[in-house]
Image 1: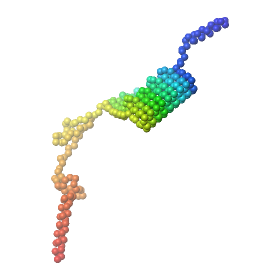
Image 2: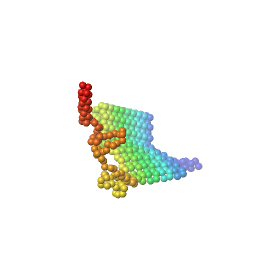
Image 3: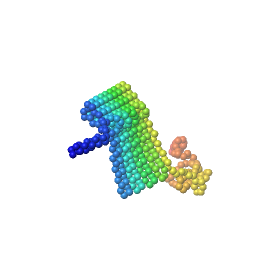
Length: 377
């Protein structure tokens, strides 16, 4: 009986060992103190509800991962998440592989729908490497830090939030994609370096800030039975190429294609371009010219006026203008009187006419005084 029990236990053990999967060995910490390592992470929580013809749903998928293993050799306080991270002889290093998240939400009721999403990506291919560094922070993959202190490196990042809604034959949408592009970041023998977006290279520099090319492009569109209207405002800073700072102090480089060698207090930026645009696909009303009837204008009546579509055309007959010198002076008492012969826009009895009246008045005054003197004599 005892032998049968031993045989059963042996059979169960053999079955278990024969079907068990090999243990994961993605993390390796040799000679390290306080190391925290986590492999690829992926979660996809979602929720939804439907009631009385209305529905709503949402999801927040998140993944953190990279190719390769996490390795921390002879390091102190190393934190590695996602795979493909390497830290050797480092202190206080934090390494996170590429991060992807695509939260979204949607709702609908009685023919009306609405939705929004905000996918975010940080980093791409490649691994994070920190050798002989202190206080290095690397996010997104493709970052390298050797013999550095206080280096912060973030791979290429992009976000594309969008929103839209529709009802009764009409729809509207908007988006605001933002991206910081480039390849990997490299900080060798540098102190106090911040690199964002990839394509940045810092060698033996102090207090350097580097950012790859930046793109942003807000856009909006609306559709109604009358037509479609769109508007966009893409903006970009920088172009191809990488930022390079060698033996420099206090350097700030934005948007790629910048180089600083042995410099101090240098600020460099790539070109900035913006191309806003707007289009309209509506059926706007067209102008029309009357061809007959009461709205027609004769050849001597002046220039015809275009009437708005759908509106009755009207015209007013105006009398021919009368020259100023032919106008009557019979106006009501107290009204403004303009003597005939004077040009329009000029006050009467001014200029040369005023001088003539002054001379005439002086002459009359002198004549009167002379006659009075003779009469007394």
